Length: 343
Image (tube, rainbow, N blue to C red):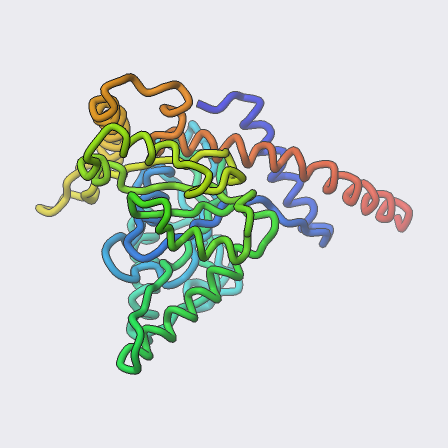
């Protein structure tokens, strides 16, 4: 869990950010932007990182607008407290920040995605949500529409146009130099990593890109030998660039099933969902150990599971916050002197 010092750092940084906006001296805040193809599991991974389900998850193009999630750890919030920020977004709700229930947030996001789906369109305008919760990390994450791989030929022209539209949208988010890119891959072959190839158009050396192999639980049974597992966990430099952020990829699994009270629900509460995520992580480590016929090293364990990824991202953004402070404070001090002189 976060230390008190980490919590105070996050709160102090947010206060500085608010002051900078009040003085009209805005600065770029660090964030994590998710990039992956359709069905790579982006939205499911976001939910697992947050500790509760809220999104429209499923096959195909479900996310048609970027969703920016400003998450804050708040031990007093037993249930997620959600606030929709949409002062410039009449399509959602005008009037700044509005508190919404989790069910209302789910409905708003689903309806907006369905509206865009009916129009066969995508929007680069972000749905911005602030969330406080006792199980949230201190992170800002931007979930982007899934990249599309359209088939060639004239009959697929509409699909090809959608592919170009999504790529432009996602590329514009990746081009923000202060953003960390979370690159999701859904395959067992590091030599055939299509998302990574797309990300390298913006970040050629992957020095601000964290690479994540999703759906590890479905991947493990596919390996024929311990050598195959070794090569997957620690790919050679010829298959995966050594310059990636963190130097090694992460491996995650998110259990399937939705939270709810209906007959199709797998989990009765988000508590059940979080327990399932933790159990899945423990099972993945157990299955890898069995396949390798040896114990995982501490370095390997640090890269397996949503919890490990969450810790890494949180610590990474904390370092980014500290790097930004020397830039922010002098500007605010200068503005303060000018205001005092005018008074």
